Amino acid sequence: MRNLLSIFNFRNRDPLAAIILFVGLVMALEAALSFLPQNSLIHSFRVSRVSPGPPADVQIMGDSVARDGIIAGHLAQALPPEKVVYNHSIAATGPEFPYFVLRRDIEAGKVPQTLIYAPSPHTFASLRIPLLIGAFCDWREILEIISTGKEPFELIYGVFCKFSYTLRHREQIGELLKGRKPGTEIPAGAVSKSELSPPPPTGTRFPKDKVHPMYRQKFEVQDFNDVFFQKFLALARKHNIKVYWVTMPVLPVVHDSRQSFGFDAAYYEFLNELRQRHGVEILQGEFLLFEEKEFYDYTHLNKAGAERFTQMLGEKLAAAEKVSTHQR
Image (spheres, rainbow, N blue to C red):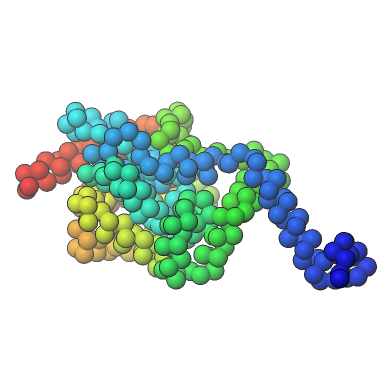
């Protein structure tokens, strides 16, 4: 019988010894790291599984741009007093996520009457499957994702992330190894950055050469994203939930940087198809150009910008809801 301790004798140059030692060390490391606190982004996925409080009359969905740029309390002021408005936008998410958010709310008996969906357009061209599987979804939801057969290598990597602390928190660990303080994400439902940050002084410059590459790519929709976005629309339709689309304001420098490859034309074509095929009402379709002083970075509105945009949105929503009520 083989002496199991012989695997520690490296003179044997046994490949099995190397594999066993490697797996053992990885498991020990992962077990040790599992006692560390979750980073704030991963934590936000846990605390925002279901909307708090009573079912929302109007529920805002999207990513951090919508979370910071649409103020639920201000939007409610444009509607009848009894209307409940809640912003359930979650940072770092894309069009793969809203289906699962909405399904969780419905299963919890919190069916919203109206959805305002305000996604960042660039997220339709990117895949966030490792984050979706590794940190956001439970195993039942993961099985549904796997059943699509889309992006198999991303699916496998996502499952690894589900089991691995180091893969789920690789950005945070990377920042720590570089001697930097990891960036923090505010959990959904908490105070947004737009409420924490004062407006930057007039004349703040956002140089064109500093625009992130993701904002200089053409508009397109990944097949995986489209599958779950269609599921999201179908689920809303099944439960008679009105869906409004909202395009968030942009900086002129961001708008200008993507004119050379027809970003706006492709995006508006996509919105027109949504309206015609799925009955999505476009509450705000065009890219409004807000001033630099109304942003605290290249994409997120500060408090002043958010207040201005929410007021505009509230007026449009009140008018659209009034028309909808008369039609009923």
